[in-house]
Image 1 (cartoon, rainbow, N blue to C red):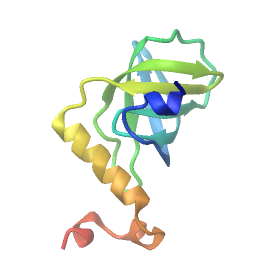
Image 2: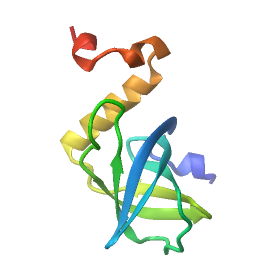
Image 3: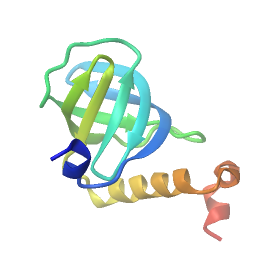
Length: 120
C-alpha cells in the first residue's frame, strides 16, 4: 500500500512560515503541504531527528500571529523535510485547519480579503 493510500486525509499544497518544536529545540521553516491529519515541514536548518519523536507545529498566518501549536509526531524524515502526523487534534485546532484549507483552495483573489468580509 502506498503512502498516499495510507493517509487518512488528502494533502494540499500550503506554503507558510512555520515553527517546529522538538522538546527544547525550535526549528524555523516552511510548511509545504497540510491535511487534517498531518503536514510536511521544510526546515531552514538540517537536524537529525528520530522518527516517532513528539513535536509541536505552529503555523504562521499572513495577517496575524502564529496559530496555537498542534501536537504531532515525526512520521518520516528526509534531509530537511519532516512529515508530521497530527495527534489528538482538538475541535478548535481542527476548525482552524479546515479554515486554512478552505482559504487555500479558494480563488486567489479571495486571499487578500479579510475573514470578516468572507463571512458576510
